Length: 264
Image 1 (cartoon, one colour):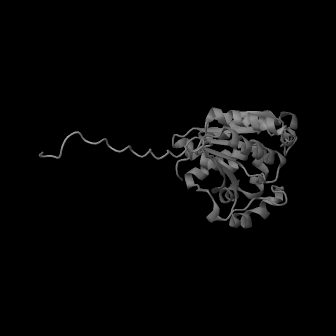
Image 2 (cartoon, rainbow, N blue to C red):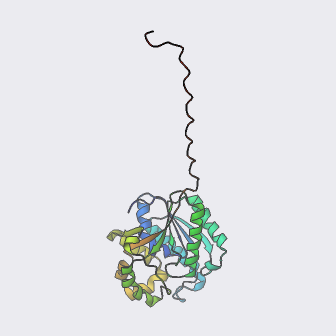
Image 3 (cartoon, helix red, strand yellow):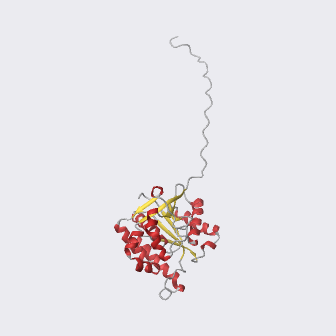
């Protein structure tokens, strides 16, 4: 993978960033690039087991899980937008966009990672975050910055979608599918990086325990061994092109010489 420069990921809930971009984040951080992760909510509504993880405590639980996960990946710069899980679609779009744009102006990313308009799984929070980030990119990204949308390939969908539907991961019409020859960023994880990603996924214990019990670790190694993004936008300078310089005026004729012919 070529150097992505400063990387900014903008996601909806703790664990979105890990499934979709853990490899890219860890590789970029290890290469010396700045990596900033933004999460819109603390995932308060995400309890699979009310006895072990009561909904009243889920925000704190998932915050701690996310920070452990990012530490495994070597990412220390994390920001919250502090919205409530499940409410992003009702947030004023100008407000959400403005919050992301302010962070983008501060971080000055070369690469922005987020959901496509489909939200990857169709979740309303995901779709709202995509809309905010896309609008913020147009407003605040620097010249040459690139916006990437998470996606999957046809072969991935064929292998994995039905198995994941045991946990109702994808709404109708998702996941988004992009052929490999149309991908802008395709990142296969080497075995060592895959194990780091698996550890980062497992740090989100309250969310992943059921799937691990149902499928086992090898399922996650297969499902998340590659990360895929399509190009959403490239920021081009809005400065007007310089006007062409006018041709210089014709030179005036030389004055007649006061000297006679050479040798006269």
